[in-house]
Length: 52
Image 1: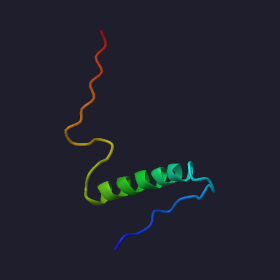
Image 2 (image 1 turned 120 degrees about the vertical axis):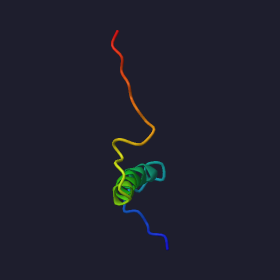
Image 3 (image 1 turned 90 degrees about the horizontal axis):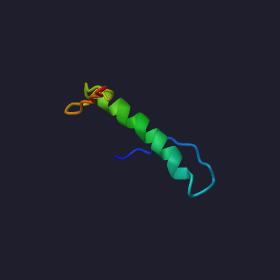
Image 4 (image 1 turned 120 degrees about the horizontal axis):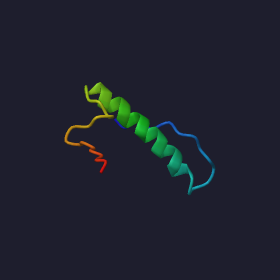
C-alpha cells in the first residue's frame, strides 16, 4: 500500500515538485534511521579534505 508524501501545494506545476522533494528527504532520513542506519555517515562514503 503506497502512502502519499505530505507537501505544500503551491498552485504551480513547476514548483509543486520542489515541495515534494523536501518531504521525500524527510522520509528517506526517517526510513534510514528506522533501519538502524545513520544517513549523515553513509557506508562506503568518506570525504577527505587535504590541505596542502
